[in-house]
Length: 259
Image (cartoon, rainbow, N blue to C red; front, side, top):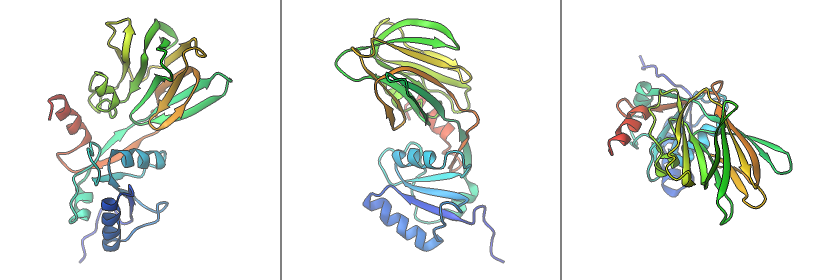
């Protein structure tokens, strides 16, 4: 009797690089390539950029995503092996992440809404430093931050841009968000804050014409913002699959020890 497997309809996605495309074609020929709408698992072949794009593409659909690294860093990906895929999928463990939701109001009054798996960051658009007021749950906490910008990161994204600007690494299952300044000038010694993931972050831009600011949710940018609200979208769950011993939580833990 043939062994039954956990997933019957596998869809493959490639980053488009020559290496990823060749791998995708070979695996699709071996295992078949289900239509994306009918797939019960998606295998993404590329780097972290492709994984983020794939998670955004399937947001709200509860389709598990299993990545294999055909890119460079591949922090979110599993190691690539060209054999044993069905067995690996059978044994893969899920990591559940929730995205941030950003509501950005621009000078004209229009509101743009976007979600971010890693972080939402605000950044100056010109040589002028940004001047920002930060409120948490409706209470002003910082009347003026003069900086290149500020970001709010999820635990999954805490090892990305957040870590690069000296923000804290958060365990994946921590009910927290990191609020981290980007090249702060005043207050010079402010290093940011850890917030509960139920908090609502509001950022107002002082002098938005003289000191224009962009707001970016992962890869979606809104320019000339005047007010940005950020919170965790607990109603949306994203499922990443990882090989045993190489879970996203384990990788985040290793990062804290420089591994």
